[in-house]
Image 1 (cartoon, rainbow, N blue to C red):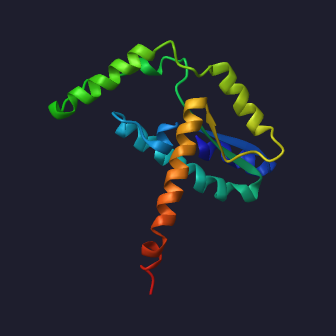
Image 2 (image 1 turned 135 degrees about the horizontal axis):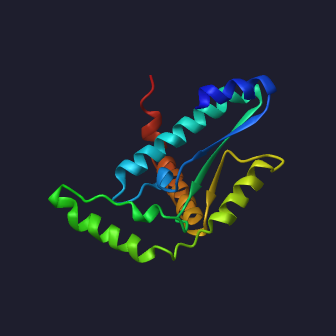
Length: 159
């Protein structure tokens, strides 16, 4: 798809690519390893794509929503590894219980994305929802603290 659309955006010197990530693509999600892995991949692709197309006037935004009132919670598969069944069933039960009660409003989420795209300095990523925002901020603060605590070890790997 992108190869079909990008030439037109390059020719115009303008355009947007909006990639749907997830809070799970930034902090992971217990019981959703494959989903989180796919969303982490979208985060990496988006960061690289942004640099590649910026010289052509094309902007790229990653959207990382938390839980929104959509039908997303209705798609569960049964776990086939016995050791993981209790954990997956607990996660599934929590999601089923939360279905229809998610804090995220899809209409407000779309409005936030459009506002981000129209900002004087558009962000590279927008996290949607209070719980998602709090989780991502905590993850980044913890990661930065851990990185700084291990700076000497990290820097010791060079010649």
